[in-house]
Image (cartoon, rainbow, N blue to C red; front, side, top):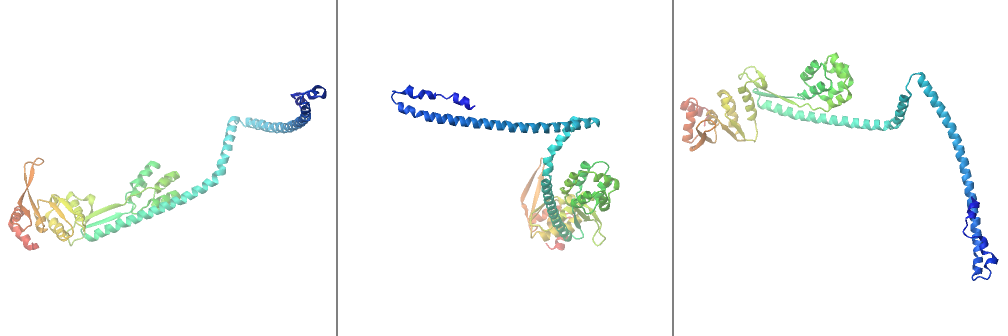
Length: 393
């Protein structure tokens, strides 16, 4: 290589020989070029020789690596061939084996990252448990507020109406989850969970997580159905913990006359008139909101009106406004109405009109109003006088 570089120099050293430049102008300057070119030639020769040496060393090094690589390749190939022979002897498909080994190798980074994921999962589960505990506390506090309100109503209407609140009384969200997530025969389980007096999704989920024996012990679920629940996945249990079972309110009316043993009946089991009685008693409780009632006599008897509604109205009207549309004169008369408006209807129902005569608007002291009241009041004037003397209006 050094020789080739020398051969390609653009200027022949003989070109500046003394004999050829003698007598030419600037000959002395041309003579100064010769040592520069000589030095350049020597330097290039040295560089070429060094490059040749470096390339030779590189070739020797690569050859050594190639020899080792080929030896290693032979070992690996021999091992691979032996594995294939062993697989063929055991009738295992080599292609499937390679794919499995490749999959295993791909899972190595996942395995290495597993501890971190497990740590993050543990932190998330701890946070979730705390959130669920806080939520249960909030639901319990909410229930206590409802329960105190129900107890207050029961005290105010003692002997007539009582109200009870059941914690998580509406079990349908939980029952629907069991039907969809577990399925199969769960009739007895559903009946037990529906009828259990007090239940929380947290307690049920805890027993469910601990297995069939815990479900049998804590809730009396039949063994076969508890085993079925125990086969459900972890996700189903987590879903159950996140359910909200609404509190339920039960209103009962005492149907017994005063001074007799109480006969409490649920609102759902009452007649229309009895339901109206219970609801109106609740509406008449202490409040600042106006109360508008349309024809209570349609569903209530006079005894209840005179003994329950009227006394309550006379007491509460100092704090709130009552507006009654009624054909029963007992309500404005016995209730000592501040304003009575007599309406006169003409025409057929749905197409008729109502009118108000100015003379028939006022208190019971107004003669026209009193005459109107006597006309409507059962028993006529005699009944009106008896009520006037009894209640002192």
